[in-house]
Amino acid sequence: MKTILDFTVTAIDGTSLPLNHYKGKVLLIVNVASKCGFTKQYAGLQKLYETHRDRGLLILGFPANNFKEQEPGTDADIQQFCSRTYGVTFPMFSKISVAGDDMHPLYRFLTDPSTNPDHAGKISWNFNKFLIGRDGRILNRFGSRTEPEDPDLIQAVEAALGSNP
Image (cartoon, rainbow, N blue to C red; front, side, top):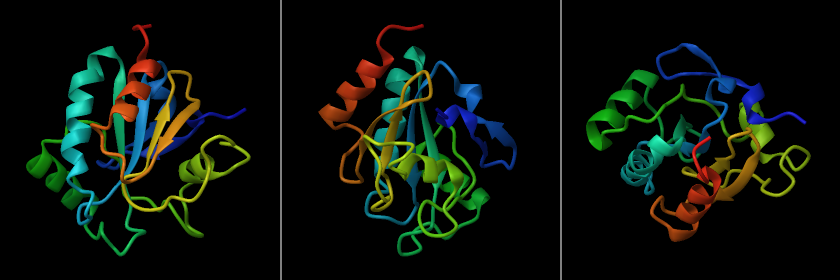
């Protein structure tokens, strides 16, 4: 079966990046937006990343403008906003669609019941989070209202990290 490691995405600087580059890492894939009520989660995501990156956690931010046009900027605008406002240092990617007919293939995979039977379903809003194991398989999903500091999310991340490989 295919995993997220089989996809190639575009980094926010425009370079193509195969996700297999992150094989062996635990990933938290998040659809983000700069003008959303949940935007303050960037701070928590950055803290989660700083706390666990040495054990192999990467946060992958995918800007999307699907919900009430809450991510209207260009990739350069988004990158500048994230670094200046929240000190984001985790990997950010080029703006994509996470819903509708133009949904990015990665998000089709993440939300389709045939490829993600345990955690499938439409993206409900900005800041949905998918926890991915070191092998590229989807381990868990958390909604927009689940803050990065939520004990259940932290417990799931720590369980996925286990011991360093």
